[in-house]
Image (spheres, rainbow, N blue to C red):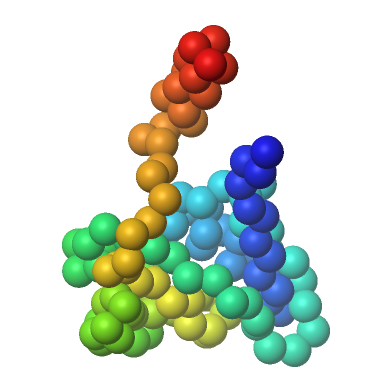
Length: 119
């Protein structure tokens, strides 16, 4: 059974970008790795949110810079924030259905345990 996904961002300023992901975005480094790299930052990863305008306002309040304002792409509302190394990191509010997600890890584990005992 697949239980998650591990994503990797390569950056010449890995420490700063790693701290940004942890402190500003609240993403644990165990799920999102940032590795040192020679040359340009590279990734193909999008953050998703339920309300892009509220999310961007919250991120601005934490010191994040909006690199690209919201644009309607049809499939969703797309914007980008600036990482500490100067690169852009896209974020969007999807219009397509997304998989259900747990509210927190403990609740998710309790649900899995209950499902296992009732099946």
